[in-house]
Structure formats: structure tokens, C-alpha cells
Amino acid sequence: MSQHHCDTQRLTRRVRVILGYDRMLSQFFMDIVPLDAEGFAQTDRVIYSTGADPCSRRADINFFREKIDALRIRIPEAMLQAVLKDRDEQVGNYVVQWRMDGSSTVLIPKEGFTGTGTTDQARYGIWCMRLGGQFGPAEAWLKEDGNVVSFESHVEASQAAAQIQSDMKSRNLRYEARELSAHLR
Image: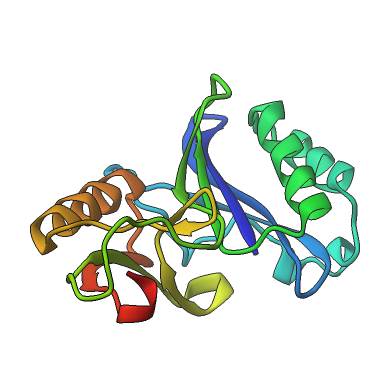
């Protein structure tokens, strides 16, 4: 499943729009949650959720565009187009943070592995964990351009994980440095 996040406004309140494509269910999904003063998603106070809207099943991207408009929320058009591309390419395990100017940062890249270490040299990666919430728990390696991101030291991986955790500002996501198994080095 792909997930595209955008922190934006709804009237006078900051909200996070999470929009994506679930390739296993072959459908789009969307959640809109308020953000607290520190920028953390308040997942217990959902404004909109696909899971609670039976009309969203098998809906096209325009259905979600209309929902966003009806709630007086703005997100970048590029974010909607990226979700359509995810459907067309059957993308999974992909998380992108969008900004209102249309720029974005890939937080969890598409599947695969990059690394230059040999199998007898320890290498480290970032283990990403979703702790439940609306979409349930999940775990995977941090990836870039479809490849597992690797580091030569645990310290490097830990620093990168801490930066991602800080940028994400979600209590449901955790990132930690772990040694890559030999087949991933």
C-alpha cells in the first residue's frame, strides 16, 4: 500500500490528510485526522476515514477529491496524481510526506536493496514499524528507489532513524537501526 501524507488546514485547525492506494484490495483510501499543537496526528479523533464510509469502496480518485473539497481542505494536485501513479504501477510499501507547495519527501521508498557492503561486513538499516492505528501494524526496511537503504555503522543508521522519526511526527510510526541480515548486505 502506498501512503501520501500532507499536513494542511481545515478552517482554523491543522489536519493531516493520508491518501493512498491499497494494491491488495485494489482501492484508494483516505484518512483525515487533526494534529495536536506539537504536530502529532490525533488518530483517536478521525475527521474522515474510508473504513467508516461504505460509499468509498471501489471509488475513483475524484471521489476523494470531492470529499477533500467538501471538507474545505486543500492538498497539492501533485499528491493526487502521485496516488494515481501508485495505482497504475501497483506500488506498495511506500510513504511520502507532501508540502503545500507541491514538493515532497519520500519517507519509506519502494521495494528492493541498495548497498555496497560485502556479506562478511556488518551493515545496518532502518527498521520501520507501524504500531497499529487505522491500518493495523506493519513492519519493513526503509527503502529508496526500491532498495533497502544501508549504512556502514550502527551510529549512522541510528542518527538517520532519529531524523526520520523527528520529521514524521507520528506516535504510530517508529524507526530504529538494526543490523541487516547477510542476504541483505
